[in-house]
Length: 362
Image (cartoon, rainbow, N blue to C red; front, side):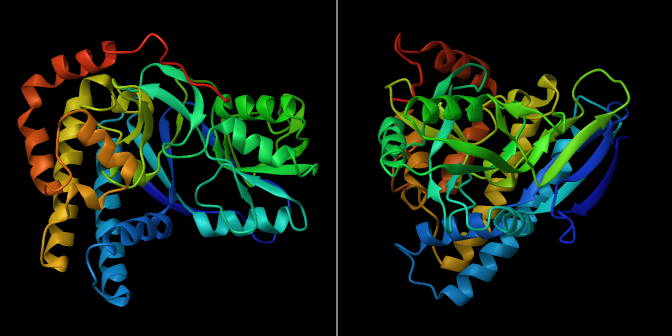
């Protein structure tokens, strides 16, 4: 039986520099989750309010409680199916504390933000790593679905002539951030430093492409071990309709897919065992179904596919899984019924790729 411990953590407000958190490289698997409740509830409310005139003071608290319940199910499933260790430590980080710490550190600086949770007072740059369906193969750094081409976004920043500080939610591999820094540099945008909320497993003095990286929270591994013992997992990526992996569709478009089968192999995006991909997907389908049933009862009518964010309902309609005016609960039930076909279905999607299915910063 796996052991699980939970910790609420955040930056020390009395410390102006980086707060370092040391975790063992073996024996314990640490899952870091930002509390993204406020962001996710706002996105859900904005989408639902277009068709459902329920008062904000009624809908927002109910969405918040339902999101808490959903997060509990994610936090229970991830450790149970982890491939890393017999003990899992769940670290829930307060995203507002992180944002406040970033603002204190970057006061009076001009900011570019790659973090969707960090908007006020910053120029947003909507860039993500794009993947083929399945989540195994990256096709480069691309604009978020429905966003302007990155070349246009970068050109607008270059036109100001100002130096910037770049802020992001977290750095794990640094792949996305390095690509963005190269693009900014080529366009003549000077980035003085990078201030991420969380950095995982990098040396405290490491820079990216010569640009200093000064995280608010720095996770460091101690001792020796096998596989990396740290993962970052945001709850919103497991709930259909809020966020997810940016994926290239067979028709050449882009969408956002939740981190579970048949769209994404969860083991490619988090620390669960590949043998548990299907079991994890079943857990997430059940958790999503419960979430949307609760919201449907509150609204006195089902949440429809059209109520989801455009980047998500494009995923479902483009792949022929649903139509816009179908209840989300019916779609989830249909996906549950496809269990025996998932392997063939995902293999077909993974191989049904365009020759030019590559991402670009221009």
